[in-house]
Amino acid sequence: MMHSLFAAFCLLLVPVQAEIFHFEQVPVAESKSLNMMYVFFVFNEDDAPDKSGGKPVVKFQGLTVKSTSQDRGDEQLTGYKGIELSLLKYDTFWDQIDPARMCATQEDLNEGLSKTLDNLIIKRDAGKSMEDASVYRHQLAFGKKAPDQKMEVSDSGVYVLVLSNCGDFDQALVTGDIIVKNPHGYLPANEYDKMPFYLGLCGFYVFLGIMWGLLCIRWWKEILHFHIYIGVIVVLGVCECISWYMFLQNWNGEGHRGRLLFGVAALTSVTRTTMSYMLVLLAALGWGVTRPVLDSSLSCRLGLLSVSYILLNFVREVVISFRHSHSVPVPFVMLCLVPVSLMNGGIFYWVFTALTTLTETLKAQSQTEKLSVFQKLWWILIVAISFAVLVLLIQIFAFSSASGALRWREQWMITDGAPQVGFSLVLMAIMFLWAPHEDSQRLAYSQQIDGNEDGELGTMAAPDTVDGSIWTDQVVDQEKDDDSFWASTKRDPSNAPADVIGAGN
Image (cartoon, rainbow, N blue to C red):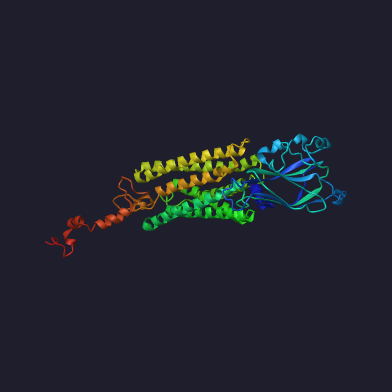
C-alpha cells in the first residue's frame, strides 16, 4: 500500500498543468527513438458543447533545447534537425508511425517520405498536409529559442504528444510549453461533461437534504443517531459535488489542475463513501437497536478499516484521474483498483454476515417491526452490490481493452457517473426506509422489563417482543392511562378524591 501511496503523491507533484504541458529541462529521447509525453483530449468546433472560446488550437510556446555535452555545445549543433515535438491522433498513431522505418534517411528523402534528413517520418495520403492528416509538429533547434507556433486543430479526438530524436545526439534538455485549448477552455474534452453532472447531482443532494431536514424538524423528539448520521452523509454529498465542480471550473479557466482543490474534492469523496459504508455496517451490527454501544475492540477495528479504506480509495481517485494524461500503465491501474475492490468485498461480507445474525436475533425475539426494516435493508444492499459488481466489471473491461470498447468521451460515466448515481439511489432508498416519523423510537435500543415478582429489570433488549416486554414509550402511555375513565372507576374507593362522583360510601 505504501508504494501506491507514494506513486499517487508523485502524480500530484509532477510539473504538468493539464492541457498545458510544461517541459522543465526534460531530457530528449535517445538517439533514433521517441517518447510519448502526454495525452490531450480535444473537441473540434462542431462537437464542442460550449463554443464560446472559438476554434481549438495547439500552441508551441517558448521551447528551447540546450546541450549538456562538454564536447558538443549549442554552437556546434546549430544545424541539428533531429529533435521534434509532434501531436498525433491516438487512433491513427501506428498507421502514421512505422517503428521499423521511423527516422528519415537519404533514401527516404529520394522516395518523398520526408523533406528533411533525420526528421520523424509520418505517413499520410499523397497531397495531404500535416494539418490535413491531424498532425501538428514543431522543430526544435539548439542555440536559440524556436519561434512560437500556433495551429488550429480540425478533428476531435485523443492526441498523443511525442518527443522524437532521429539524430545521433541525445545529451540535451528541453524547456517550454505545449498548450492545447478547447472551444470551452483548457479543460480536457473528456472531463467537460462532469461539470453539468456534478452541478445536477448537487441539486439532487440539496433537495434530499431539505426534505430530510424538514422531516427531522417535524419529528425532532423521535430523532435517532442514524438520522443525524444520514444527514451528515447528505451534507458531505453536497460538499463533494461543489468541490468537484469548483475544481473542474478552475481547471477550465486556469489551464492547470488545482492541487489543493483536487485534494479537497478527492478527500471529501472518499470520506463520504467511507462514512456511508460504516453507516450500513453499524446498522447491520445492531448499533442503537440491539446493542447500546460498541465494545472497544470492535470500535478499533472499524476505525482501522475506515482509515485504510480512505487511503486506498484516495490512491484510486488520483490514479484514475491521471491515468490518461500520464499514460499510467494498465497493470498499475489494476493494482490500485484491486485493493479497493477487495476491501469492498470484505466490507459487504461483514455487513451481510452481521445482518444475518441480527435478523435471526430479531426473529427469535419476535420483533416483527424491526425485522421488517432490516429485511428491506437486506434487499437494498443486494441490489447495491449487484450494481457495484457490474460497474467494476465494466471498469476493468474498459481500462484493459486494447480495442477501446467505449469512446473516450463516455468513459467518465463508468468512473464517476455510474458509482455516483448508484450511491445516490441507494442513499435515497435508505432515507425512505429510515425516515423520521412518529414511531421512530420503536427502532431504538431500550431496556426490556422481565415482569418478575420483584419488578427488577431483566436482560437488555429492544422491547417489542410478545413475551411481556413493552416499548419504552408505551410505559409513558400506560402511566397516562391511569387517569382514564376505566382506571378511575376501578380504583380503590378509599383512595378516591372527595369530589369524584360515586367515590364515597
